[in-house]
Image (cartoon, rainbow, N blue to C red; front, side, top):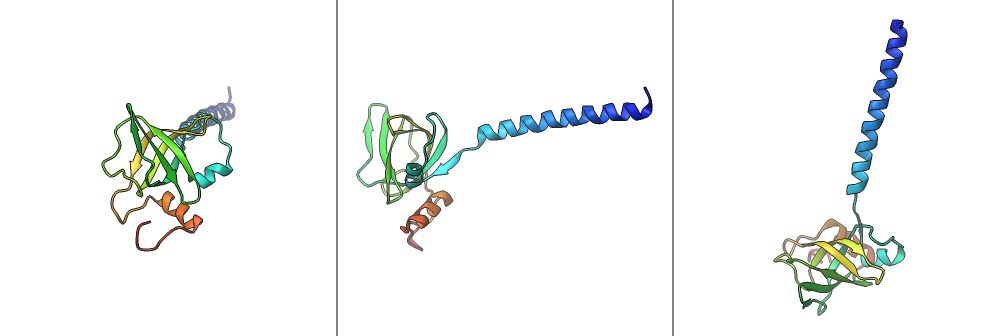
Length: 146
């Protein structure tokens, strides 16, 4: 083989390895991307069952029910609300009227099954996704954290 042909094969081999590495990275990233939706945004979309995403809003007043081994509550963006079921220990800061983000899947019955629930940190903090959803719904109150 001539030196020119060796360089060509080296270039082709390098491009193949680089392409395979890029494909693996993109595949790993697509598995870890989790989209965020408010209840109103979710009502407009038709997501396939078992697609993981984050649901955010406020825990609706009077909606928290603790049953055998699970907690049921409603998440609202003050326009629409969605039933959530969670099996596990809730964060200490979880309570009605507070901001929450739940990660999980939407079942065919329209109930969101959460794998993880994140509560807001203090009275001034609001998860950015929840704040944006409340601003878009026209329910955001400056300075109150809600």
